[in-house]
Length: 425
Image 1 (cartoon, rainbow, N blue to C red):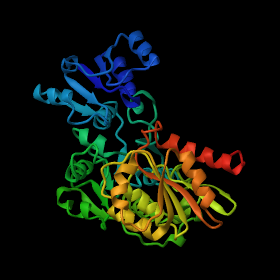
Image 2: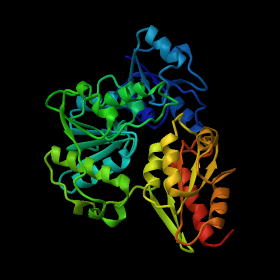
Image 3: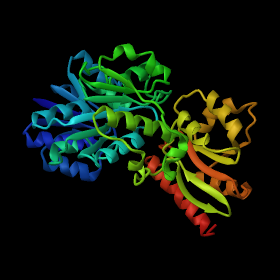
Image 4: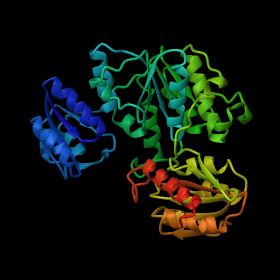
């Protein structure tokens, strides 16, 4: 069988190693320039490859394994479909191959527009107090790495994105969950319906013996429940913010905990709030950095869409100075602006997202300014902030205008604040 790996990121590198061990014929096609290390590896292993674009050689294969970020409307994908070449992606391909290797763990798969990483991390944390689980997908171990490493457990907890789900041929977790669906990635998905249907692929192959956990307050989920054959269980917030451990007392955490509790109990284990006392919050998500002269700094770099910013901002009264930055996702910012009017003192905007936001800020009761960089924004906001105020980076946009990823952007922000604390400016 001949394979083409379309895109050569972390997951497809692992899949290549697996296919080479099986003696399969593989061709690698990468849209960007390959690193010298990657090229050396490919040459050493006798793997044909191309870079800086996808040629028709991609079509000389029986199966194309697509990196999730490849656009569904790209010319090479259109040609592959015309030629009736099978297309798959890491998630479904690897789960199927793991079963062939004799490992069939209980799979818990979680998706949503916001809160996925925190929720699956909580699930993994609580499960490991009572059994053994592995955390994989968009967080933890790449699923493809499990093909090559002898890591095994009774439970496999997966964080999955709309991109991964869109490309899956057949994905049937024992328990699936959709936390929420808000407008997101509409610079990739052509419309909201396309995005919603991609999310629902997490449950579409499930049967009556499987479980689907969902948010009963989300209209985009509720109106599509008829698509799901699995047993449907809504998650409910049966506790208050003050019931949570102090380090988790943020409004958006309520949904994460409610979903985690429902999922844990649905698969037959015990959930106690006390289990979260030693749960480590993920960085770049409402992360407290420090306090300088009575001014608190928070890093929420993971907030890459409007709803994530809304949820972060709602944790504060009217003492917030907000930094938004990055590349917007063609969102409607009407609701965001209404929340900002109630909760913020000032807004600093950095990067291309300014052009998306400014039409919505016309006539709004929001004091805002544009900055050339995050460091400039921090300096200006710190100069005008007073004791008791909060300065928060909650960008609302992707990081790729200036950073490799949201983690690098968050670390950069923290370094700025730390130097400010040391009075190096």
